[in-house]
Structure formats: C-alpha cells, structure tokens
Image (cartoon, rainbow, N blue to C red; front, side):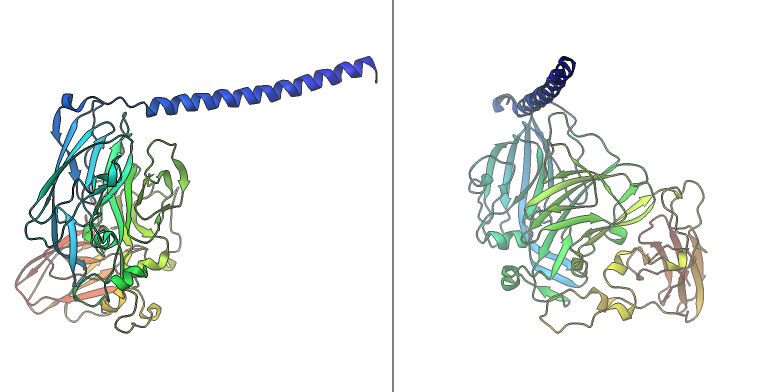
Length: 495
C-alpha cells in the first residue's frame, strides 16, 4: 500500500470513529436532557395544607366537562358527594333497579383539579340506602386509594384529604365487597388532574364513559344485576354514559367544524377492553391510558382503553355532519355501544364530497343498531339468550300517507350554514284532528329523523326517499325537530 493510500485509510477510519463518537455523545446528551426534563416535571413542591386557600371543587356530570382550572397556585378543593341507590332507565322501557351512583348519577361526576391540589372529600351515604359504600380514587397515593377511610354505612359521612400528586385522567369507584358488583351497578366516575401549566384550550370538551350492564334479558320492565352473566363477562348492554342512547338524537353533543374537540374517555368496565373509535375522524392526538405528561400518539384511528383506565383524544373535524362514537369490537353496537356527535358547519368539497348519492348508506345510529332493512336483521333470540335486540322494537316507516299533508326534509338541510337555511318544507302546517302528516326525506345522501319536542312522536332514521307518517288526534300545537340536526324545526297546528 502506498503512503498516500495509507494516509487516506487513516483519515477514513478517523472520520468513522468521529461520527460514531458524535452520535454516541449526541444520544447521551439528549438522554440527559430528557432526564432533566422528567426530573423537573417530577419535582412537585407541595405547599403545606395549612396555608392552602379553600374553594368548592369543579365537577360536572357526563357529557359535560368542568371549566379549566386556570391557575397555577395550589388550593384545597372541597367536594361534597352523596351516594344514592336508585333506579335508572338503561334502555327504552328497561328499568334497572340496582343503579347505584355518586350523586345518583351513572356515570358519576368528573372532578377537575390541578396537580398539587389537596382534595378534601366529604362522602355521605344516603339514609335510605341499603348497603355500605366507599371510594377508591386511582389518583390517591395511600392505602386502598382512600377506600377504607371513606367507608360509610347508610346515614353516615366520612372525610378524606388527599393530594393530587401526578397529572392524569383517573378513575374512581366503590371498593366495598363485592367490588365487581358495585362497579357494575354504576359506582364509578373520573378525576382530571391537570398538569401545572394546564392543558391547551380547545373548542369543545366532552366526558364519555363506557361501561357494561349485566341483566338476564333485554325485555321491557324492571331488571336487576345478574351475577352469572357478569362472571362470564357476557353483558346484556355495553353503553356510553350509563344507558343505551345517552349520546344519541336530542342528547347528542354538538361541535363546530374546524374547532378541536377533546374527549375524556373512561372505561369503567368492569370486564371489557374498549376499542374506542369515531367513524369518519382521525385522532390528532391520543394521550394513552390517561397519561398527560408523555408526548401524545398522533394520527390514530382507534385506541385501546383497559377496564379501569382512560384515554384523552383530540380531533379537528374538517367536515360538517353526524359522526358516530363506537367501540370497534363492533358487535357491541348490538348491545348499545354507540353515540353521536353533530358537527355544525359548511360543505367542504376539497375534503369530502359524495358523488353518487343513491349509493350512500345513511351513517346513522339507528342504521348501525340494526334499524334498517328487515332483511338484514337476525332472528329474535329466545328469552334468556345473550344480545340486545334493538331492531325488534323499531317502527317501520310507512310508505304512503293516510290523509293530510306532506312535510319534506329539503336538500342540504342537514348541513348547517350561516344565514337563511332550507330545512323543512313547509315549516308550519295546519291540519284537522284525525288527519296525518307524512315526513319525507328529500335530502340528498343525508339521513334524518323527526320527533315531537314534548314526546308526542318519534320517527326512525329516514334514508333518502323514505317516509314516516303520524296521525294526530289531539287538538293543539306540536313543535318538532330533526334529531341529528337540531337546527331543523317546524310546527304542526291541529284544529
């Protein structure tokens, strides 16, 4: 080898070694920076609780979310909750007699505090209750999450002070034996512990909890907890926010096109993992397992949420319309695991434009629950078998009016726009008692339904061209609106 070649070989070896050492030291420095960042995040300095100013804590019921804390200093957050054993309508005509809840609600409250806050919980067990209850807070660093300290018999009250030491989105639940039974009967809620700097503001925040309800069947009437089915993890119902339809039709939340939506999603279980998905959306950010410190995952379609866990998802809908919330263990749709979000806005043909409307299947909650063609429905099961048969009770749209007038859902009425809009045509009609009104969906590629605002009637979801007829025998005034599109309203005057 010549001297020149030898020198170039030495230079090459030196460059390789330099690059390798640079990469190694760069990684080491990056790792040290990350460690210092984590140390800064973990170095929470607690203000002595004797020096903390007190205030009533912020909490709400689903799907509402408390306002952001909006402060940096630590405080004593005072909570007063009462446990009530009650009844709850978990599906149309199905009354669950073992609905036990914090403040009488299933799911229980969403409490919002800031990391470092001292949470002072006053828990009361209503005098007319039959059982002892307590709370295990997942955010609490102490024996049982505070369960033994908060154990209360009927008529008693207990108090616990506990620090929120780590940011996150945490479950709480009753931990009185039999623990699974108490959770299955509705004794759960969530606590949002904001990071010290708070969370970035968004256009809309929602609180959604998935859970299972175990009854022996889905027939109308009074039902109680079925331990045999619970032990087999075979729920009669899988629901969002405590009941079938709690996030559908007039109870569906509303958001605005191009504004970020943040959903705090809890999975109370007690048995099943949730595969949370929103049909027609991609999550911009997902804070997995309620972790508000780690960088979020991005551009996810579906996220897993363990029983007793949570996730925080964010997305920005660029297109208006109705979007379904589901557990993508998809047969759970038959058991009630579906909600909807109505996004108000305008058409956006650059992102989404149906070109062949006659081929568009309606993306409605009723269609996904089996309220469509009778040919697609499975045969009803015998009494005692698993499965909730929502399709069996769905009314069938009548093809022709009996007598009276026709009201059309006009083209474009399902897309909210600023200024004058076409909705129903006509918006107001006058009929005689005993006559009928036929609602016809003349919109293109958009499903609609109508209901009386005082419960006088309710149609199924109507695809393009379908009709629903209702006879009105009582004199008076009936105000009606479209369930997925609440800006669509009208009036029927019955003489």
